[in-house]
Image (cartoon, helix red, strand yellow):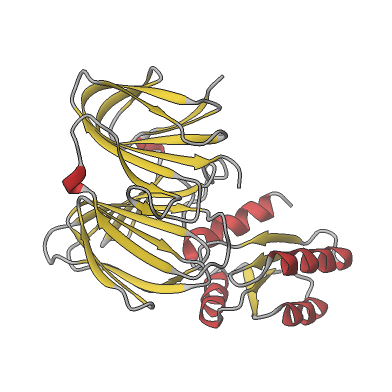
Length: 101
Length: 238
């Protein structure tokens, strides 16, 4: 089964770890977590992510710069903000993003 | 002209985990309905029943304004900022999750279920320093009048949050007519009937029904049978 690759970027290590675990609870999704914009750029070089989630601690400017960088390399990537830091909104955010693709 | 969206009690998502029964007005966790994603900045309206001594173990939140309003029973809250408190009916608790917070939430009583509304609003600022506050509003409640529970202003009545939102609650007798004037242009108001029967702008509502109204300055509420009502005024755009 081809899994949907999802990148989560946030500065709170425990929350990023939790989000990755929650994403990986879904057998058709694969989550990768990074803690900075630089790590996100490196991860994106290695993996063609379908969805990118901007989590807590990422500034609006970083979001804009990363979105520009990612869409220039992979036009169909979906970049969205993640809110809530847990399972409550996560699945809905990703499913909504995939529906809009 | 005012626009509205009706969410009847029976149309809500339901999650039954044994220890927790949760009725969800908007998509949440395993309940996903693309037409039920939010009402403006109001993203979560969960009507939760937690069994005695059970609850939510340590879990994180970030960038969300989280409001808990107990309807019966007691909830015990502990968080990574060192706060530990019990909240009961007549009290409201707010957490600005901001850059990140961990907390637990348990029914503080061994036998009696804890029933509470858990409400999440998108914040108007991301990555704020996390904060927690709770207060009792019971002593100031006046029958047949709205009571402000929440606002964006630290010096105003009730708790405050990082959003241009105002919550009002009231218990009204049958036959009463009341109104609510919105505080901020462009905001909408979400009416949630906790108990009783009302008509809002001539739309009949029963217990646990919700009605979102926008493109209006005010609403009129006719009380058909004694009713406990929560009004949530929120921005319609993020």
